[in-house]
Image (cartoon, rainbow, N blue to C red; front, side, top):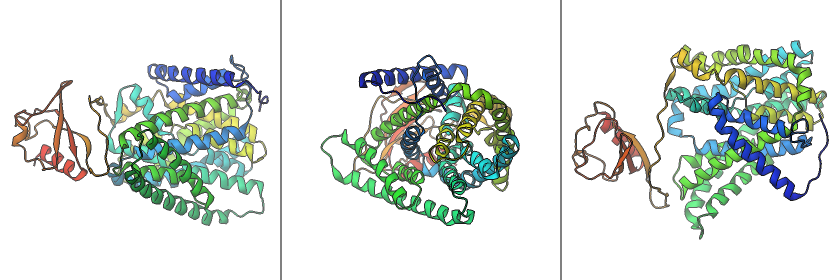
Length: 491
């Protein structure tokens, strides 16, 4: 690795951090035009600011980078859980879990064998590299798709979201387990099985349990200041991760499931809390990638470039397709959908964070291993990112991305109201088209709040006639929304 740390006055650190974050935000705007995920540009900003870049910031503290990465990943996974709709995920739970478990293991094994041949390392070291690069990053995938105005079919998008949101715990477990086997030769691989079961069961139980308790507590606390509710959930993430880890569970699985449970239940200020955590997740991603960019030294990448290039190609064209087709062989996904999933294997910050674990734990040759992982991640994004929209179109699994409307009103959940604002669309040929709202047999607890038509908002009245492709903003509970959707579709 490179030079040591330099102590700077606080005001210098604040100015430097602020400038780097601002540059990263500007870079996210540029990323859409060049077809690269914004996260890769965050890395580039960090590298340019490093000791070998124009910034000249000397940073060589793997333990600090790892600690920041753990905290950041916990908040990112919690935010991902909040945004996941269980109703949409449930039909594709099997394929998603298979990819997040068996797919990760197969990727790690395939890359481990390839690493033995390319790098000339022992099997355990090769498997360690394979485990480190085995998880995917949905943020990188969907940022590319959004920037190009290309969407994926609903089922396919949900599978990718579930896989990337839930495969980090398995990759982390494999990485930590293999490090233990390397630094302690007397340890047994068979001993990892009960450890794995314990981590997953305890992590799941704590995440689900605290998630349910948190919703009940938020609805009953009646805090005097609205600004305290996001702070409460901020502390909640720390508690969930810490408790799960202390009792031997998987903290990352726990925070994801806690977010999933909370996101699919009603609680006070849910909308504002979700917005808060979405912004916090972006801040965590920027901070994480900037730190990892500072940690790498570009001159070290030159020597490992040939091996890194070969291993990146093996990951993209062999390990990822093999693991995807093997785990999804008995699923209901079509061959074209499976092929797209195998191509959508972009790596993100998690592999680079995991590559700091060998550095911190004294694994031999950990420095070159970190550089190889960094090279693989960057090359994966550079090769696959710009081609994603074209591959989706060639396979016929893309669909136009509908612009998300911003309604000119806000609604906050209260403890005694089991309803929320939900958007439904009047499909072409709907039996409701041409009828007045008062003529529709809507459930008693459904209120049509706004109607969006051709980019304009209409305040609905009972005599308002509906038309094809109208978007209705309803205040209703979940069961009533399903009835309205069935009514609009017709027989």
